[in-house]
Image (cartoon, rainbow, N blue to C red; front, side, top):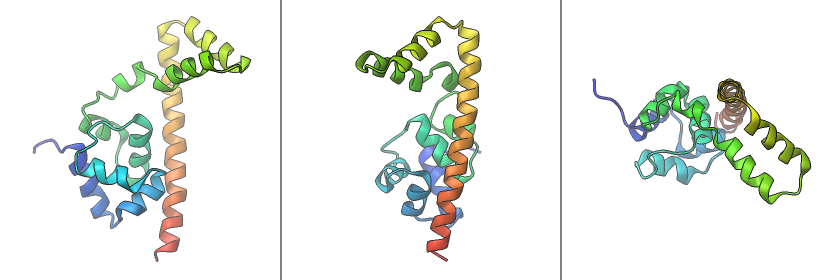
Amino acid sequence: MPKLSLADLVKDKRTALGLSLRDVAQAAGISHSLVSRIERNEVRVPGLAVLQALSGVLEIELDKLLMAAGIKPEASLRVVPDVQALALASELSSDPMLGRFVRAWRRLPDRDRERLARVAADLADLQANEAASRNLETVEQRNP
């Protein structure tokens, strides 16, 4: 069986669940145009947060979405874009707490950074799934 592209995987699962583009977008907290662009293969590698949200709404394992997008699941743990964004923000921000966090992060050994990244990813998955479930319930209540 050939590997499905991210576009095919998202569209097939959305239609199998009987959801519209807007339903998925609202439940995932993203724009319907982004969902449409993903399904048309115009966005081949959306951000990790988008994939996490789609994972929860469409009931697809995050690893499966990552692989369909051409990302090795373990690679998503080695690069922590949120922390990199915090590092940039700390340089632009006068918030001393943010700066202290980033400096402490930079001093951690790689092994500890990876461990914390896994915990953060698990928490983000849990939060995204809970938010997607709440949003999906809202959509289902509006569209009985």
